[in-house]
Amino acid sequence: MRSVKSSVKGWKIARTHFAVLIVIVLQAIGLGVGWPEELGIDEEMAKQEKIYRSRGVDVPSGYVTGRGLSDYAGLLPSGFCDALSSLGSSDRWLDIGAGDGQAILDYYALENDGEPAEKCVRSFSRARAIAMSIEDRRTDKWQQQATIFGGERIRYLSGKRLRHYSREELGTFQIITDVYGGFSYTEDLSQFLEKVLGLLEIGGVFYTMVQSVHLESGKDKLKTYYQTELVDAAGRGVKVCSWLKKTACVKVTCESKSDWDGPTELINIRKVCSDVSVPRVKLLKYEAGNPPGRRFQLEP
Image (cartoon, rainbow, N blue to C red; front, side, top):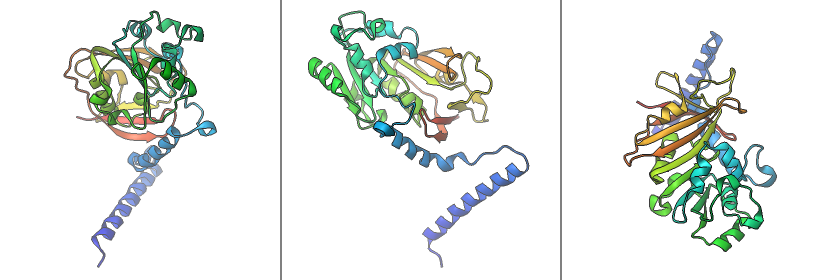
């Protein structure tokens, strides 16, 4: 008699073979059915981890870790620079997916270092800033600036994802930014957004962007490849900004960029009260990349 363990293993194999057979049959009769999407997610996430940990010549093209504050000014919604420049010395800024922290280095740059971010820095006052990255990508320049200004003014956190930090560890913030960071890479979009909004002060703003999505303006170009897709329970497309606007206790503004390389939304999310509730989505598809390809489905 076979053991229970071997029986379960045999059932799993049979189930996989049956799923493959269904796909082959449906394709043979002319229905455009792909492989069951859940079968490759673990493998794709393992590939993604290798991208995160890559160094030197192994860093794939397109995986940028050194964006400066002037890049942020061009990639984030209008109003970001005004908001950042208005922060005082007791205010706090969190930059998620900060790479080597160049944006914060630019923000704290001394006058003789030039003015790479003049548009975003218009006062002598500087907010306390935290750069967050999965991997430690600090440079000698970061270490020098940290020595000058002190760990209470600029900090660098690495080694774990945003969801693994407690609110007590991080505190709260007036501004949180994400440029090709967690919002573009996470496999749990609802949890990520819920965590971000939980770290914002009431009145605080989350500035982010996401490329290759269905635009709120509806001005997508034909034959566009979408890296991040949302669908409802019936499989109908849902726009990212339409989904975001269902979140309780926030005000969402989106700026659609149809003329960029990929249709891109620049997103401004202002927290207006404390009872935040993010509509849930589940992951259907994940393909490693810079950023990864993702498909989510709204849960009832």
